[in-house]
Length: 82
Image 1 (cartoon, rainbow, N blue to C red):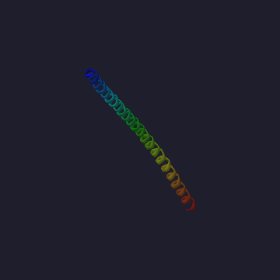
Image 2 (image 1 turned 180 degrees about the vertical axis):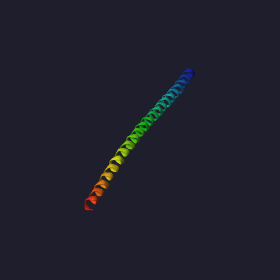
Image 3 (image 1 turned 135 degrees about the vertical axis):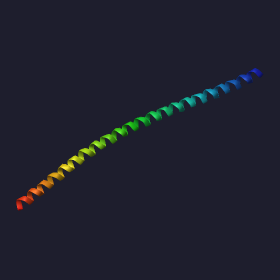
Image 4 (image 1 turned 180 degrees about the horizontal axis):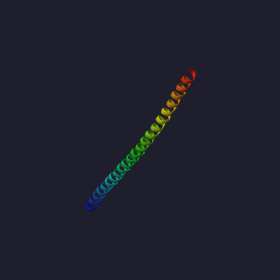
């Protein structure tokens, strides 16, 4: 009987260690996945910012060109009146 009780206690301990190890491994894998996802999101956001800056520069050039064209039209209209 005594050996049987020891065997059951040993099996319980081994099972607890196995479950703890499985939990630790699954949580560490989750951490790696989160870090990888964060890096991917950061890279995507950096690319998005770069594209937004290009769009801003393009729009600024278009606005400046439109303002210059308006100034020229005003100047030409002023010259036609005089």
